[in-house]
Length: 435
Image 1 (cartoon, rainbow, N blue to C red):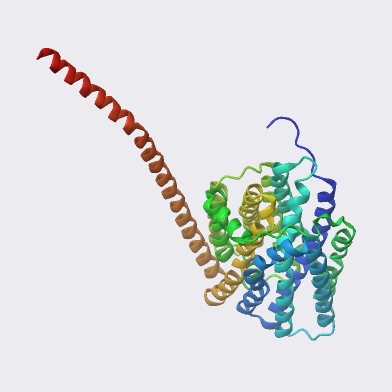
Image 2 (image 1 turned 90 degrees about the horizontal axis):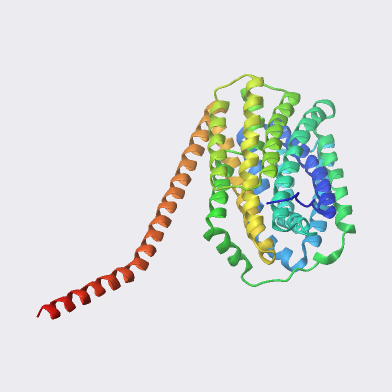
């Protein structure tokens, strides 16, 4: 590639800033919610169950959400979905301020917020890719935008948890919930004021099947998405793992917990920057990052010092961002625009759908084996799963090589047969002449 890459469109930049502000609020609420559950129940298992409840709607609603975006339009779906989530965040702040926050109430809000997130997330990602693809940015713009979106998302992971930790210590969790409700306003104003060109997308029958076929049959997307599923179940459940490890493994208060989450966010931000700077992701990049995640979990189980734990979580964040952004870039680069809603919905189903099982599994293993034993077991399972995926990739490569050899042999066969026939004719002519 020659020359300087075209800047990403202005509409995408505004949209990205609005998303960034909203994501800071979301991470503040997520951090405050996790800490509040541990204060109310003292159980990492119940915390894992709450996170699972929040992400379960993605399993059943993300794919229908892609079809809704096809029929209703990404802008409309995002506008009304984000408005509903803002009201829910405000309602949660009011409940906590009134000291009515018991576990079933928190679980109910988590479920409703999970439904809103599952319905809006495919449209959010697809709209970002569409905005990035305009004004000459093209396919490369979508790849750069995917890396930049990951960078923005993980920068919010730095500020959100750290700010939440300080806010909880100074004002209590109500403050973090209220800030999340306000953080939706810039995005809502942008969506309300944008042109309605995307109001209704063309609805295609079988777009979900076509998108699944495209992503599954192409090795460059199948392996990254399977890797995301593996680490989503066994490794990157930080909303359950880090609060339980901080409270029960290191004995940290809210400030220390926020700093530990901030260390993870620093690494995730670095990983997103590297993916944006070098966006060409191979199949081996997410596999290597997933293996490193398993090693980080094993290392985390062996330390009880805050500085070393923060350093390990920084590396954990780098690997997490690498796996997620590689998969997102692979999908957004490959799919055509008429399948983007459906393909993005499948991607979100895999990324978020792994969280319910993973969060419940993480909470249960920490409850059963403690922070150290649970982290070690999850790390070992992650490494084993990555080895299985790597072996599958190698076997596929061997099978493809054998197929090429077979086709090459078939092409050579007629030539060999022709040569043999000519030799037989020459031999017969020689015999006839001698006779």
